Image (cartoon, rainbow, N blue to C red):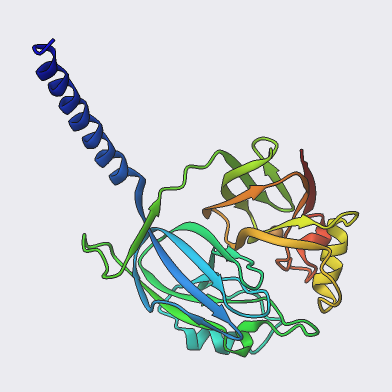
Length: 286
Ligand SMILES: [Cu+2]
């Protein structure tokens, strides 16, 4: 009997060593995406001025009373936020060639926190909110809701105060194109991590909605584009703001049974919104 005790201790210690080293390896692999937290209110972002490039999770915390999102815009050809502000003075001007929308969390209801994960190359960017206030059509960006962001080349140095989250592992793919959304498989109840690819040719966005009972996506499209008056026919949940052709991004939603919709409010060359070209769809989660 006594002889057995050391053997048991030895086996136990070996098992402990092997599980703890396994855990370390997994933790290293799983917690590696830096999280950049951005606070939104009327009408400003509180965000870091500079981050390191690569795959990054943007966490949008809506501290305000209105809907807000982050559209992350890459400034090319040496342009600055001033150039963007000048270009925005003409609301009918087409998107300048030096401005590339790359996505971001879209759209957080007051008090909520939503995330989107995307890969950022080094360069100069602007965070902007293009959602208008209720009763108007002036985007928040025109009221000053823009912030410059410098993305630096990864240099192997972790930023002070950086936090990390598990690498998102998508289980569903969603393709955006003119003018449709296509899931790789039906959405079931529970949490899904959705990998989105814009196949273009135009910019597209993902406005993900849980519809109120008896309401349809057409009701939301009308409500959102006629001053957002009265109770919303749908609740926006995590989605992705406008992204150019070829861009990918990842977001997650926890789906409870009900009817959902996806819609896109990007403007087509004919000035109609993509939703008016049929880029709106509903799906039922059982
Ligand atoms: Cu679209």
